[in-house]
Image 1 (cartoon, rainbow over the protein chains, first blue to last red):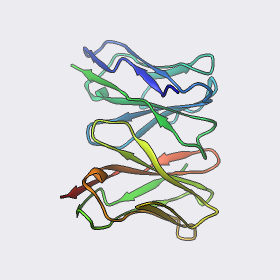
Image 2: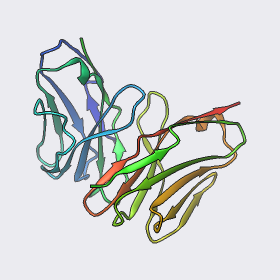
Image 3: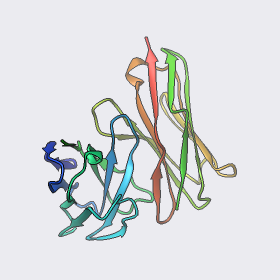
Image 4: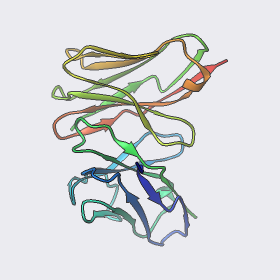
Length: 115
Length: 110
């Protein structure tokens, strides 16, 4: 079946602009995650959704970052007033149920470049 | 919350040799330990996982061991091949938290 998809695959934006990144999880997966990966670095956890609620937002770096999930499916990560340090690959993942014991399936990522 | 440390950050081995990557975790309640492989420019993918009720699991050339008392687990790759070159991430999960290690960049030299 279809895997996790993300759009756009690449996004170049000017400093100060807002951006929206989209994630379509695998159908039937109730858990959804956002991570940030800077060049050559690890997976920085941002936020975790269970259904439409976010029990763990502890990784969001600042109040410029927000995310929502609707219909227990699609999620959008919004970055307001982008800064150059926001440049990274943003990865979305989903899993069948919660994050404690199920494989996470990753999307291809959105490469964000802030100029 | 959970804290996972991973060592080494980089590892270079000769083709055919073994590679070992080690992780420690902080939450004694953690009970699920997956390993992900990320090839250059690609997404991370699960390669093996282990749950706290077993001490070792093997899948062909890869194996994972878990020491719950010491709170550490390791990935072992035998007979390494150039296609094993990638970044490997460990993770630890408890009832309400899951965190990844910082990653190990493995290079297998032909």
